Image (cartoon, one colour):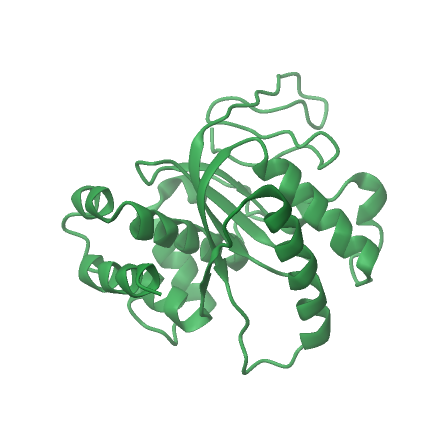
Length: 227
């Protein structure tokens, strides 16, 4: 079974491989496990992608923004206000508190974009504040072009290309329900992998031997590590 979020942010339930929580009338049980993870976050005012990878680069858990909202906060998904920002951030932070987070890679602003720029900036400020309340160190901030290059080898790659490459390298993503396999989650997967490369370059290089993007990824990770 694919590792994915299920349930609501109210109890920060996390699903681990082979174990899911009760949902839609199906009987199962929730398991909370403190595991060492690298986290990738692709922020969105309505649909933030969050992915956790283990120290071997394997997929541990993945979630979309909608997974982090409590039923009371879901409401009108087209309404962007501080209450919805806070509800999503609260859910994300509760989710991450179930893990021992080693590092976070966070996609920075796309400065050439103007669509809902103020709304996204407001949400980012709240999310960054929430993460600082949990962790002593700030995330690695990664430019969208750098993340795309890390994911595909091309800084101008489209979302479909990033998604296809992520699924190719991480079959577990393909097991997600179709509505959960979004570009936000695939971007977050790439970011989590980048965090792994930054902190554990030798381990990443060893396990990714033969990958056509290995050299590019090591160079990007080294540039971030040297900041």
